[in-house]
Length: 484
Image 1: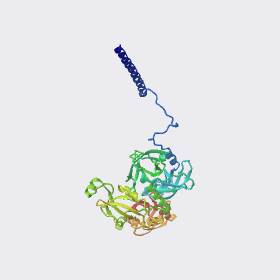
Image 2: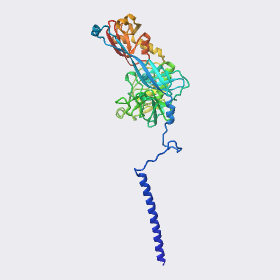
Image 3: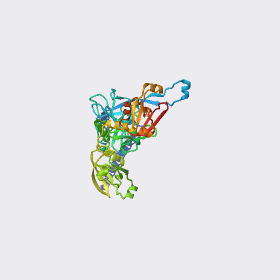
Image 4: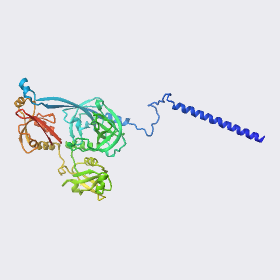
């Protein structure tokens, strides 16, 4: 009897366990087959619910709302001149022919309001040579814009509209921007107003983007936020809605976005804007060194223990670096405690200062670290700050000529609308390229020149290649190019 009862109890327990296991197994199988079936409808979630977001979610709405109202659409109009070739056969059969053809060129871009009283930052290439600037706010209000100043070397320009109490973006700090963090590009690509795209910071310190004839200061922030034609001059902002760069260029084989875009760091922008407002032109400081980046092979050749830094190949006689005690063969690793890893990053740090400013340079010499105080100078080894009017006068003086307005009868005889006559020549740029006295300048870089004041305006704040076109009194057309 005892054995029978024990056997019965064991059998009942085993049967109960088997039934329970089968029940749970069957239930799990049913649930699993339902959730994995592609035939079932997806589960939808309301976007307006009160469910707390994931700790890893990134919300761009606040940064976008702060940015779109502070980013403007810029439309430009410029009057261009095409000097036509002289055709004596056409004049023989059809009479006197016009020598100049005027046409209107239009462009567009973006800009960023940086103060409530109407100061707007954009790219130099957006407004360069513009005769008329139209600024359209995000709320569709339209204003005439005035160029306050520009800098081709950094491709930054400052314009202004007459209005108060405007929304504006606050400056961030581009030195603190890190590769991999989120960023938003805000602008007007393809005339699509108030467009916001998102991406990450892909790299810093990019160079070889601008025209090398302009003595470029390049240390671009690279991002994969979509940027297209029309975005130039727009804002690159962080997730706090702070301005960290001005979108400037894209790397593309077809002229449209292909994954890489570049922005001028905001710390450079701040310096350029401050100089333009105070002096009318940028105060450029130079370290006075001939430098190069360091790679593994070069480091081994020069017995340099680390690859971070910039190698000093040579020094400008009487320049800032030489007077500070920097020597050929030194490796510059920091400027004002900011680490510099490449030539472009060194240029970026130096570009934030004016001639006469004192900075600390950290160098490695024989693999030992030294901190040297450096007083920065201009390209001609002075610490003097200059005004815009001085640059204009300097550029005009460099031409080495006197200029007079052209008589109406001469304009009629040559069948041109306007120009400036080259008077007495001295040893300057015009004489060096072969221009003779009496030559009538009709355009500079395809921009019409009507008076001596026009000529000065075309040469204001200019550097790099200049193209001058015009006619001699005998009707022959000529054009000359040179570096200013």
